[in-house]
Amino acid sequence: MAKALLELEDVTARYGPVSALHGISLRVDEGEAVAVLGANGAGKTTTLRAISGTVKRSGGIAFAGRSIVRRSPESVARAGIAHVPEGRGTLTDLTVAENLRLGAYTRRDRAGVREDEQRVLGYFPRLAERRSQRAGTLSGGEQQMLALARALMLRPRLLLLDEPSLGLAPLVVAEIFRIVRELNERDGLAVLVVEQNAALALDASARAYVLEVGRVAVEGDSARLREDVAVRRSYLGY
Amino acid sequence: MILAFDWTQLAQQIVIGLASGGVWATLAVALVLIYRSTGVINFAQGEMAMFSTFIAWSLVNHGFSYWAAFVLTVAISFAGGVAVERAVIRPVERAPVLTVVIVTLGLFFVVNGAARWIWSPETRSLPNAFSTRPISVAGVAFSISDLGTIAVSLAAVALLWAFFRFTKLGLASRAAAVNPDASRLVGVRVTWMLALGWGLAAAMGAVSGMLTAPALASFDQNLMQPVLLYAFAGAVLGGIDSPLGAVVGSLLLGVLINLIGTYVNWVGTDLRLPVALAVILGVLLVRPAGLFGRPMETRV
Image (cartoon, rainbow over all chains, first blue to last red; front, side):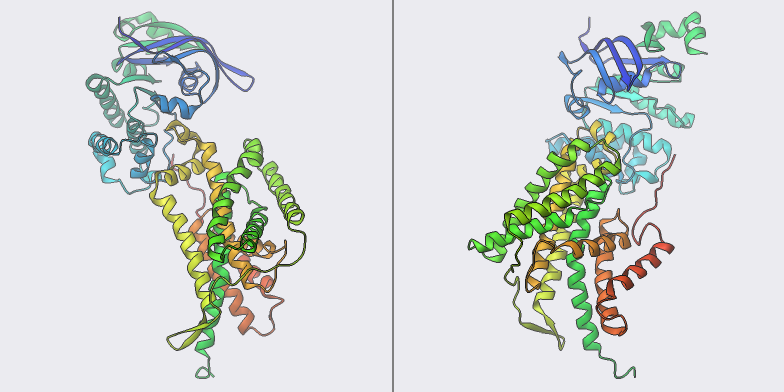
């Protein structure tokens, strides 16, 4: 059995008085791609935010064997978790190059950073063309690519992706998922991806969790869930 | 009539205006820094600068040369600005804007009171920062002091710009000011970036205060209050969210006020400020975001 990189045990989270997660347990193994599916409001985004510390949470969250449940978002990032949030969180006032430099903010190895910048721009040639442009002038798809590229600059051990397909053209979405899969399969980067588009996410992951109102309703191998007509009908809507 | 126009006088008045404007620009940049990161006008910025100036006065009184005191005061003020943010602003970081504004108003009185308590309210003076001799450039006599003031203010602003533009820390603080949530996700310690901003603002204020005081025969604890008003006007003219705007706005304002005072006889000295403010109002009616300010823009 592979080693667990991230383990959530009975995690709850709340926005002020409103409880959004009612005890979620899930795990992501070293180098594994895992999808979190479910309807709007099921708690997918909140699950990612609980991990990165951008929402008030309690329960057990262990990353690489250490509890991170009390850590601030900046400290979680420093531990090696890169969160690409919903709405991308690109810094629109900064240029593409500055966004990438900022992504490597916590790193001290200058040579490695420069190398990674070349590698990341290799994944996204369109960003290379727009290096000195302000991020706010990019198209939605380019901004999503930039968000992903910036997250990679952290050289994370785990990538959290929130709805990477949201509002993007199918071709762009396919491109982004192709790169995510490549990162996972070739570089062994562990990925936890939240998606509305279940078919897409199941294709790109080895295992999946289906959430329903803040709880895990179904979990299993992505290949099996894809074939399970009952699961598809009741939870995934396709 | 045109032939009789005194170009020498115009050049001299422009330089005098740039010198005042440069001093305002350093404080205006401090205001913009705080505005961008904390979202409010720091009403205490001028008083903090005054406090710094008194520190410089104490150092000079203890035998330091003006420039040694200058450098030391900038460093002390930076630390002081960081401390003020930690102690006073951090507790209200998540409070509504109005609360923070009230806190900076409170800070105004606390700093002013503290300066009165420490340095008893009597007038004092700082030695001249520059030679008092005039210097001739292209046949026109300028004061070395004015030229030096312009050079030091612009150098301070340029250093600050270089810090934000070329260093990783500067990049992180720019990011933290505009988008704190996304900055946290890449590991930026946003609250420390705020403190850093307050430290830099206090340091810029110190420069402004230490350039203001020597030009006066004497000064007291109200030293920086008019300067704060001019700096604020300059920052608004340039666009309150734009550091470049604050500099250009302040320099323009300095020249404008000086030229109006010199050439429009009925304005004289007393009406300079109201007339200048009327001009600013005119600009803002046409460009509400100021000369360099950007109206809010987003792309979905």
